[in-house]
Length: 132
Image 1 (spheres, rainbow, N blue to C red):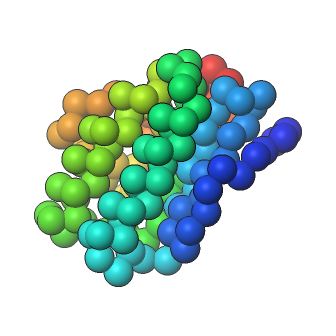
Image 2 (cartoon, one colour):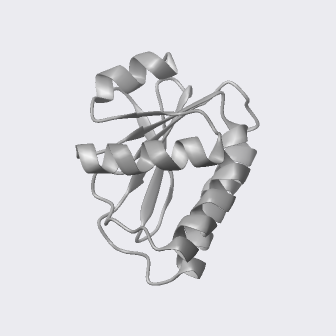
């Protein structure tokens, strides 16, 4: 995997800079967010990290394999709003998922918010897509 620098960690996410600084990897933990405010805080930290890197050529890999499933409408709307702030900060985006069910759910959300990203169960495919 090469050198990785941890930029942030809380109970729900850790953020790493990898691939000679060309890739931001966000690893979602298995701990469920207790509420939308906690999720917004984690995403806020991620947005701050992305802004602090001041680079437009970064790829974003979000590893959701451990994330608990959640699809209540209020939560989905909050996540979509945060994605709309976060995703434009990156050149390309991809999500690594554990299951076909996760892939289908995230592909549906991707179509809904119109922000292009690859959703895959194959990390090698994601790294090729992100060109890192």
